[in-house]
Image (cartoon, rainbow, N blue to C red):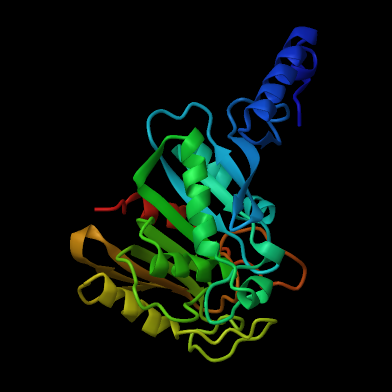
Length: 308
């Protein structure tokens, strides 16, 4: 919302704002959604489209004001039936990006879903949409206007988006670390890339079950059991045996690995299919666990794990 001060600044300032917005539109840098409404201390958020495999794909980009040098990038992947704008509203990444000086991208899956392998999920899974290529193309597009630190490109996601984060680790060498929440691997992962991994999961999740059994919901996910998944990535990353600690509902398993990588699993007793510390997504969805801020926990992990 525009402040009272901004409303009273006069015609010259309003004209300057209009000029800046028009310049952005004409330059192809994306449609600015909030530069005129947000104070200058907040990030600038723009909407972008690119063409991948003949299809128009979209993403939201949040860039803090005053970035200096090359910046880390976090790709935040929405869950099934979600969107980039929903993920931006729900998980608190914009605020953290402003305080910690990194860039966040919120891509949109086709028909609100991602192809993560094994025929899942929704239309993208049925039609074999190449979402890995889309995400790689999006990162390249961002790099044309924002200097990115190639050693600090990260992916995180919720549910179907978490599964795409794992798919990126399986099929792309772009990412330094991935941070899936309430997800698993579906389909083959024949050529996994060494990446640091932090995985957060509720023990009472009935949509993506800890034991790998078929989950509730439209997709009926029955991917790799989470304990096996954690063991799989410890093998990929050449890790030592994990150290496990429990604090109330939260249990954390941390394995140190070759070349400074880490594989971490956080499980939460009683928590369902949710992003801990987030806003409720919709009526009837599992309530977010309030005792852990998944967003800040993930960022602390990611920033500590660049590419070797």
